[in-house]
Length: 84
Image (cartoon, rainbow, N blue to C red):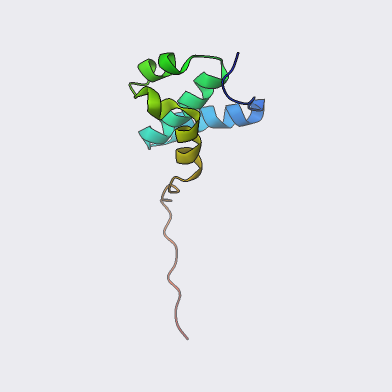
């Protein structure tokens, strides 16, 4: 039985794409943990596979870090505003 609420298929696919494309390995691990928990894996199993403490794989810590993380920097430069 899954530990977390069901994640819609399109969101799971988007999460998997982000795992493969992101350069932030911590964000990638968090997403992998959420996907593993969705599949019904235990907290201990997920923690061992991701080399993380069991307390950091808990749902409260995952949700907090996923939704409160800093956005990735874009490679495109933003033009400076010119004062008139």
